Image 1 (cartoon, rainbow, N blue to C red):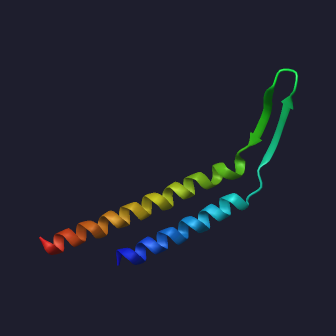
Image 2: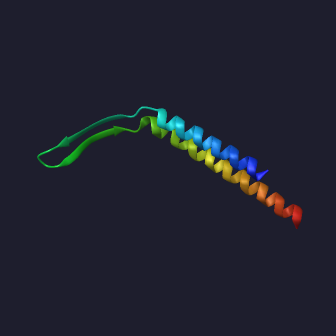
Image 3: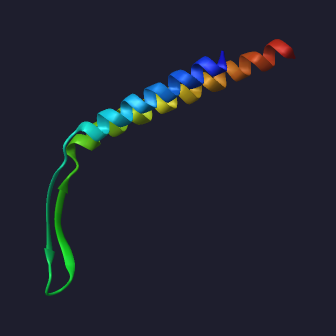
Length: 77
């Protein structure tokens, strides 16, 4: 049962990672040769909307795994 849950979790992680990587980010970055510094801004909007979703999925997966572990211990003991 845990092997199936682990495979599903890995698959979900791959899908989430691919989704996040496929979103194009907007960046306005410039390099000043005189000072040798990089300045500008990166639009993090597409990523900020995905962060709570990824955290919720990870939290749910961890809670379900712990729940199965507790059920297994209760069944043995």
